[in-house]
Amino acid sequence: MNSHYLSTSRSNPQFYTFSQRFERGASCDSFSSLDPQWKAQAQQAAWLDFWQREGHEFLEQKWHEQHPEYKQEIELATPEERTAWQELWERHACDQSAHFWHIFSCVFENYERDLSNGLQGVGQTLDEINENLSLLDIRQSDDSAASAESGGEDEQYLTANDDPELLDEEQQLRLLGLPTSFGVPGIARKRRKPRQQPASESESDNDPNLVIMPDDKDELLHGVQSRVIKKKKKPQKNSKVPQFMRDDILLRKYWFRRFSLFSRFDQGILLDRESWFSVTPEKIAKQTARRLASDVVVDAFCGCGGNAIQFANTCSRVIAIDIDANKLAMAKQNARIYGVSHKIEFIHADFLQFARATRLRPDVVFLSPPWGGPDYLKQATFDIEQHLLPLGATRLMQHARRLTDNIGFFLPRNSNIQQVIALSHIGQQCEVEHNYLDTRLVAITAYYGDSLLKSPRPDNEP
Ligand code: ADP
Image (tube, rainbow, N blue to C red; front, side):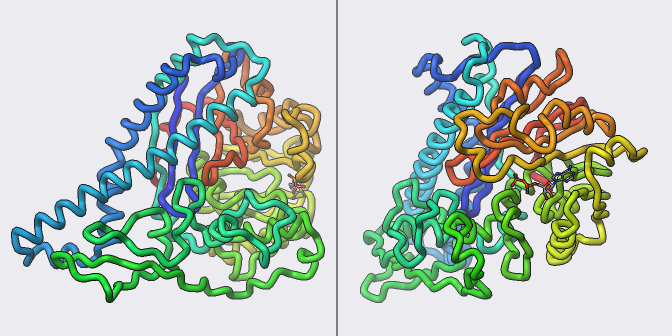
């Protein structure tokens, strides 16, 4: 049976995953051939499922963030004041649900399109896709871990030509970690709320850098004050662009993403040029680690440690392998910053040789092999048999399967999904997870192996 889910965290940038199981040998087709009315219904059903399950808790959380005084004041409130609070709550619920619906529908549409692109040329029947989509389930991922993150900037949509001095307003919002895609363009500017309305709520209201200031020209409305929001300057510790990046137009845009790569970037994270392009963004690494939680995990191409660090939080033992001793040294230092170096064994080796020689039988192997640098995006569809290094995907899987059948495979967002599915054993399923930051697809993670697929779908606990 195919299964689907959407997860989202509540901090900036929004992080979503959609996941679907595919069976090797079953045919797949593009979503574009689906009846639009049916798609709209599926989307609506998925949304309702999500909102009914998660909505109230979310509304409450936002409400108390917005109105910390509420708990105290409601105790002593007069009937009039209670009515005003009630009106405020209703407006809050309405605004929030509209806001999230909008976000949800954007990501849903992107997922349909991205999956279609990846599946192009593969012939799943309309009925099968309809049936799959009807099973869509949405869930909200762990938020506590996400909220512990600092920074959280996601500037992945900036182009290499972006100069921090010349950024337009939308780009500045992105740099500040504020939403730009969902109709709140003015949020960074001084903003006055209409009287008798609650402070407008958006993702940015979670931002610790936003200070809520009472507007002294506005009167109190039954104890509820209109607000003006001013942007406090984000403290910029150690945030000077290194010279080697300043001179490199391609790298410069990655600098803007540093906190989405490592939330503790400013504490001394080390990355070489290659790693800036290839390290897994922290939210995705966390999701993968939740999904692959086990006793012993092998991170076969550990690089500077983005994944290994997160595995250390969900697995008892992490074996982190890399062929490059400098990368391992950086990974060690980065793991120290996250306080998990004692849980990771760093092994300087060629994974292919390691797989041939070792007697180790880990529970899970995680493959995040070189994609060949940022050029992978120049291809409409990334051929995972031709362009992955050091070997094509099938041969890499053969090596990994010497150790275990339970494998996570981190792949370019434009990977040929047909090839991804074909990596399953004959007649078996794999799960293909599309990872979105904000509304954009960043990468795909595929999961293989009985125990990974039989295990409950990723839940909210890290
Ligand atoms: P990308 O091409 O996606 O930028 P990288 O070049 O950063 O990826 O490769 C990921 C990591 O894999 C690097 O740290 C690299 O040293 C490591 N690596 C490459 N080949 C092997 C191998 N055969 N065994 C182990 N690690 C390897």
